Length: 279
Length: 251
Image (cartoon, rainbow over all chains, first blue to last red; front, side, top):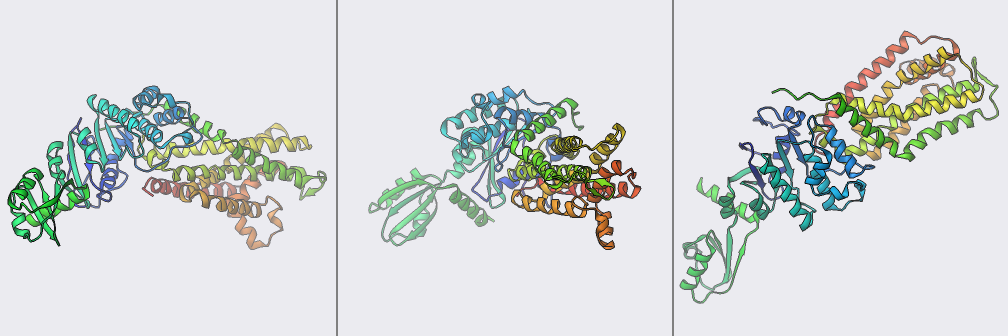
């Protein structure tokens, strides 16, 4: 982790977006005071992370961790509630997490998605000002996922600040006001969801085209970068429509055209390349 | 900013949850109750009138196995801590308002609740076999034994915080053997060579057994015993505070 600077105002919903190993979980650990930075400071609700968590201001759903056994779902969430100064009623937490029907079920008899639901309930039972979710939707099926995001949005609408980590652009796009794009322990982009989506939404146009030069292809409108391997050309584009049009206009012989979104990992590589080229 | 005050009520509810969870594991509970009781009957079978030192055999083993069973119980209570840690629970706890003091208090109380039925069962078995004491002696003995359990309860918590669930089994056996041999559970340590006796006298295991016997033999608990128990308790609690902070880190 290097040179992370992040200021999250109250009430905002922020996505930490990045591939595995980007530093999302480490950022969250720093935020929660589970890890301390070698240099620099973290301030949470005007105080240190440790004080803020002790004051019950933070609810967190960590990426790792099983549920305590030998308890029912209700008992576990209720137990978690007793550990905070001003908890939400247990029933309300279960309702919000959409798991009220599982209240009497033993914690070791749950599916992966149901387990995530219970972990969400234990995170919100504290009635937190800040809700931190580390890759919360892993193992959730479509229906549970929808209910989950509905609850998160309801909490955000009620003024809760939400920070969640994900490696899905769609998820960040659909549920965050702001996306912080991370790669290799750094923040590579930070902005409104639409801006980041444009950056991370880079597409690649592939075609078969003998005898073209990379320099010429790279100069086509919409193209950031061109590479040639044998007869196959690959254009990395910020505007794939313009690039494809120009490609056909200029090279009628081009065939086997394929346009695809690139993975987040590729987008980050692309972004970091651009950055190092610019500096 | 100041922390919002914690209400005693929420804390008591947390303790109640912990107790319920402990007693829900019936097998754990039955074993910690049954093993010392079975050993008592094995050791005393047919010999209730024999003597060890000045004590009747029944009285000696009643006291010894009550202590040994109780010690085993409180140390074994630590094994659920390692299971909780393996599940990532301590990291989650770190994000709550629960302070280390509250954590240790709760774990100590639940450990005692595992041990107390064992004490009761052994004293009942001894009484049924004719061990008699006046009420004041019973009270003194039980008081000292409960006090003597403190370093062991702390030890159970520390082991639970340091070891994973698999390592906890062998560690527990080790503690039970050391306590049994060096605590004078099976035979009085007075029969050991002087250097070994000196070692025994530096350990809390000797003094908790001694505490249990003192009410029967009429020997008062010595200041040295109190000091040894206090020193071990203090040392283990310090180690425990350190281990607790470590336990909240990402594994």
